Image (cartoon, rainbow over all chains, first blue to last red; front, side, top):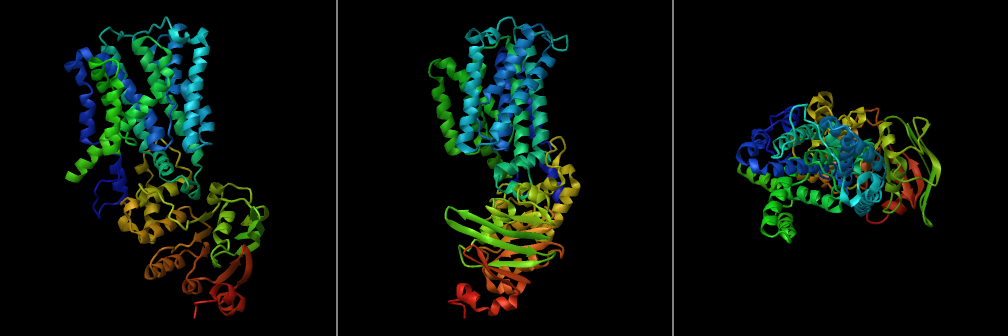
Amino acid sequence: MSDTTHTAAETPQRWLRRQGRWSPVEIVFWLATLLPFFLFPTYLPLASQVAIAALFAISVDLVLGYAGIVTLGHAMFFGLGAYAAGLLSVYGWGEPITGLLFAGVFAGLVGFVASFLIVRVQHLALLMVTLGLGLLTYELANAMTWLTGGTDGLRGIRMWQVFGYFRFDLWGYTAYGYSLAVLFIGFLISRTIVNSSFGLALRGIRENVKRMPAIGSDYKWHLQKIYAISAALAGVAGGLLVQTTSTVTMEVLSFQRSADVVVMLILGGTGRLYGAIVGAIIFLLVRDQLAGMNPQYWYFGIGLLLMVVVLFMPKGILGALARLTSKRG
Amino acid sequence: MLKTESISKKFGSLEVARAVSLELPRGARHALIGPNGAGKTTLINLITGHLKPDSGRILLEGEDITGVAPAARVRRGLTRTFQINTLFPDLTPIEAVTLAVCEREGEAGQFWRSLASHTDAIDEAYGVLSQLRLADVATRTTRTLPYGQQRLLEIALALATKPKVLLLDEPAAGVPRDESAMLFSVIAALPDDISVLFIEHDMNLVFQFASRITVLVAGGVLLEAEPDVIRTDSRVREVYLGHGHD
């Protein structure tokens, strides 16, 4: 976001404050997220899926886009959150909001434990560790059939009404409203984080990890913190999916999900939060359209889109848009 | 202030530091010179903890810091700069220096408070940038700054840690001659209570700014003395100034 023009007279105080300010485009964007209720009521279940994927992608953006931790195993936390929320309901507690908190705290704790391993490795080894942890979790869930239901999935999830009032309806009104509200809260939290001094430290790590100790930073502690926060957010996203669809299958832990979320992020653009949301929208809409045309080969289209974006828009679709507008302005 | 007691380091059979003992009193302007490969940067790496000595001790204000991690040494007041720019390319100078201030104050981990609300840290960072004549470019992306200003930012980042001892590894490396004199005048104007150890190849600058000089050859100290003594020493002339210099 430092590519904005500046005037020499502006004080650094002012300049920094401006970096964290809401722009009109953002407000319009969030208002537009309400449109599906009125314009495309038949697409509400899909819109809910998009909101959940966007929250998951934001959680990955925090580690990948801001702190520079490349991960191919984040579905692990999504899935752990999903099973946590699902099991809580199966064992008799179907209240959604506490269920989500439970999912987030559980995934966050596992994330914190995993972070001790994550900060010990870099580059390819880091990628392999995240991948390995993801695969381990998947097989663990597979082996613990008595708890997870294995490949059959978890049965008997019954969610109570949100705030004791909004029942999860067949058309997805509650599902989308609930998912959107949680996405927005998750976004606000993430926004606060990236605009803080901690967010600056994360960018410092991404920009030059070698310099961090030379300015007296215990940067590994920063990394552990953001990894746990990100895991918690991913867990909430997983919990949302279970609560709005009343099912959990092994798919929530799959490598495919870990890879898809990175693809969404690359499509939208990393390190800008909105890239995660835009990426999730594009990915799921394209998938929906392509799957309608040809259910077997829809990944072909995603692959093509990914190549075009990586080759011609190295900073993602939002990055390209930002460049266009800043050139004009 | 800073003292090394006979530190040694071997890479395989190559002795890169041979029983090096140095002492920097408060306010020192101490130059470290020697031919290429003499182990100057290695010595800085040993002092800052980027390398572990095989033997010997490093003392900061009388305390043994030989086993202390690099980041913790910085927090105790022992800071370095790098010969090759080691900056944050996509951050602006004001962001980078504010980050260093926040790290020093232990505020960098606060994720609930907006960066703009750290007004003291921002003001201090701006002060450091002004001191190094970088105020005008404070909000430009580091990557886009001219090389000479990036060298100054190297020093600004180090100063933001409030060092007691500052180790400058060729601060003027790659900077044109006229600019490097300016750069050294900035260094000379640093507060008197900071002890500075610097590596520099330009002997004119060394003789102009150093109050004491250590000559390092093949990992060992050949001679430590005042500039006038170094200038006339025949051994130094032989190994270092030898050929080419008048």
